[in-house]
Image (tube, rainbow, N blue to C red):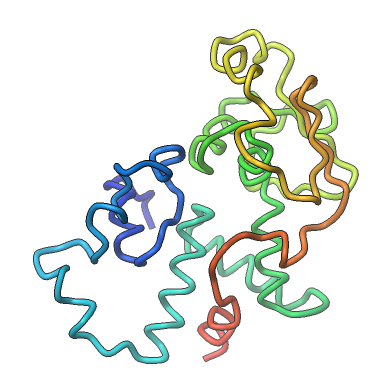
Length: 212
């Protein structure tokens, strides 16, 4: 599957909820859900009221929501699901935990980026270090004890200089991350729990989708 290059606001409209793919725009009246809360396309306004959604349809939509929120390909998502099946505990919760531990998501949760897409760009451009070493792989999985911070050279760039004034105020980090605003760093103090993941999703439907 090729990377999605169309307007991401269409994805939010298709799922009928904010996926927070456009960063700060999602919190303004310009958000597509606020202006046109119906599926995209010629028959969008009437499509939702006419269609009867099957069990498979609900399962598919939940899977697509999570994939789009975290910005992963189908093949990647299947790999995460296989890992979750082998993990202890509930498969759905293990799946979300694996996705939360992605480095691009951690950078977003820290408040270094206004969206996961922007966080992914910061990682792939080499601005982020883990335990003192540059990591440019967005899917890198963090573990408790890892320290994530901005590269010393990158802190001199205009984006991070401007961000330094409001870092730590943009959003409240989850309790499994300990953020140091002065150093623009965060330490993973624990694995994320389900209550730490602020996503309106029914992960059990995703388990049922792949268990067909």
